[in-house]
Length: 198
Image 1: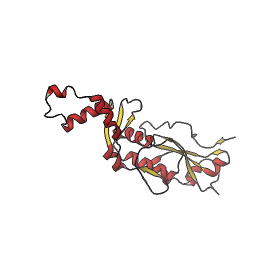
Image 2: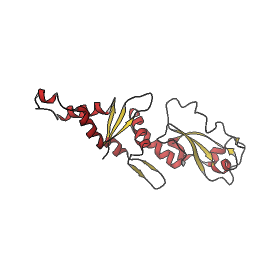
Image 3: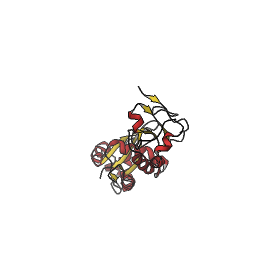
Image 4: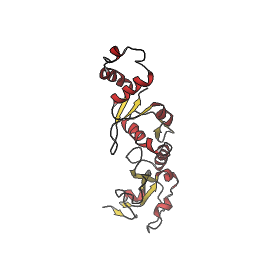
């Protein structure tokens, strides 16, 4: 049996989180293992600074013998899984360092598993320089991206119109797709995110 001692449970949504701020539910590992939920929601960018004493404040339970804190639930993070407060803070900092309109693409890149990671041995976070280098934008379809690439590179410049009109766009897009990761955009967006694979 699990006894809730905190003001919010790990499965409850953060009521004040209307701006989609990366958040984590941090809990005391010792009390969790003993069947008590001692913890609360925190801004993930500050997760590494939360202390055991702070988690126990106002619960009536002593922090004596408690040493470890763990992030048991997440909201608006790069990944949706348990993690250490240190990793939560690193991931939140990475996510918040890109423009807000790019965050869904960064989440999709990480969720694909086909991303470049950098880390300190305790956690891996996406390489933001690789993200910026590889990201080719949000498109209605990969075919739309391929057509724009042909236009922007001038691939058909100088080709007579009667020849250019027979260009096989679908075949070109299929060939080009081998060098890209094409990821479905998540609701409420539609279309795809396009990333150069190497």
